[in-house]
Length: 382
Image (cartoon, rainbow, N blue to C red; front, side, top):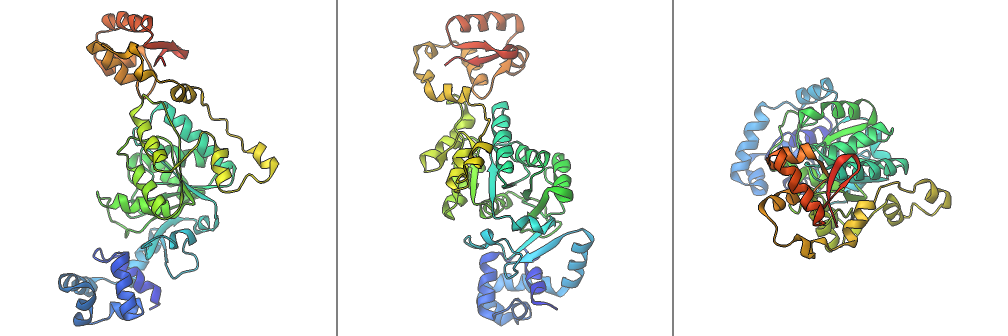
């Protein structure tokens, strides 16, 4: 049996990750020798309890049968030793020793890759920003990397698909399992025509709490840089950004309205050294992609920054008009801090009686706290 299939066998054993596999490989000089080593030799490397678990595992596990199941499911794998293994991912600390994927392996040939990540609880502002940046990055030839989660991930994948771009979804489960199931259409589109879904976890393995940080490190590892478009201060997207910082990859953050809790993540990253970006040109310049004047003109972002500029230019929170608020006024401002909403939406979220809400909103407009904007939406007035 080929050496790389022993790598595959170890990847299917949950007790051995990149660090332990490296120790085994360094000791035995090949995965095959490590796989066939006796218990005493194994104990010196991975300890007594894990050796017992591994010996029980290899007694019943057939690498040959496992590889046949992969083929039946349309799943391929690549090892760290293979020339097809993604070059950028190989450069990170403790890269996965095996990567499973469904889709087109040629997607890894594009050297221009960028992670686009953010909150699952995306606002309308976040959708517009993520969509515009992703579209322009695709137009500039980038492959979009994300995690197939709700919110920013889904928007970035879908936008890449709709604009005939390539995208890679990194999963916290086996590549044969779509999670969340509601993103099945995106998953299928990626596999069938727009790139690949990848994972370091064996097929059939469901996502767990600990699998998502591992997933995030691969997103960062596959990317020249990571863009965070919207996220709270404790957003999982910041974990991806931290991995990018750790591996000397570029980190970009889109500033949002200062009143929004979903702007705190990007602002936190900016304070740590991420580059503040308001157009795709800001990103392309970092990769020296704008050296051609025609490309500069062709890749200008059309991102709408009116509200963003207002938010950054004003210091509304310090204004006297936001002091001595009533309970209802505070509730309404809390609701509006992330996005503009219509009257019925405010009724539903605030649970304030509609007849009372009308007079409260009118008084807040008089006080200059809020304003009516297009399509009968209400917005905090900076």
